[in-house]
Image (tube, rainbow, N blue to C red; front, side):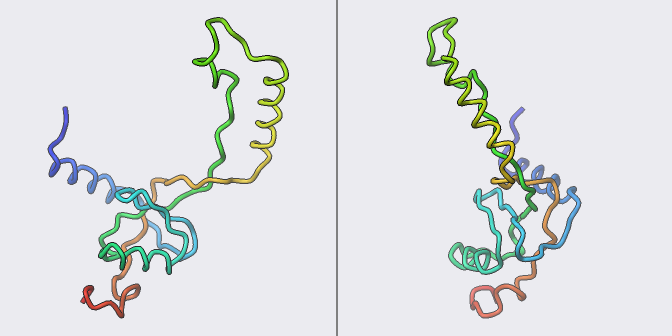
Length: 133
């Protein structure tokens, strides 16, 4: 069953508010799903809010955790190969070698987690902007 837009917004807001919350340190990576954007410093957050005429308190932000790049599976090209086709051994070895590097590399991506950012104060972040007042 599809929800109407209003019900959908209420559902997602309720789900967001049910998450545990934690203050943002101003440096770690946080995510704003509505705009599909990541922030990792206060200046970038303020700049984005000004450009988009949003108050920091309006944003439903969540903390992020480090993640790893996905491992390349040897069936990645299965749709390109003829039926029952197999990759050459040298390609399978190259995939294995690449995956070893991926596993050994520190986190390269950030993934939103289920901890919301405590509501940010508009006054702390946008004191000098007229339209906020």
